[in-house]
Image (cartoon, rainbow, N blue to C red; front, top):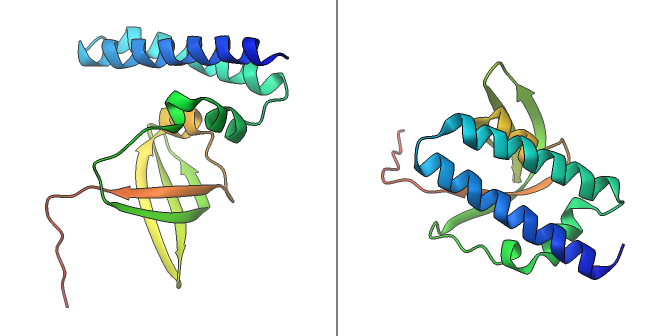
Length: 133
């Protein structure tokens, strides 16, 4: 596969992500789901061509340059993925015997291709942090 082919696929992928965001902003959930399904097929096509997901995200400069306003970003390792009917519970080890649990949609689990052992970044953005003793 040539670099031009990959660049074209990355461009189509970015367009698909943009279409999902636009449809969701308009409240067109069925349309957004259709784009998500297409994005999943495109991701599978790229992976089926032997391109590791980590390398395509790193190679796709626009996607790799996402910046966040959240300052609380903690590296961790996924230790458990429990998929429910609608949402999934993800547990990540952040070291020192500390485990962070997050509830995300099943779609997000699929999009991120989350699996036990994956290196992840836990992003915490909260207006209130409560400490009890």
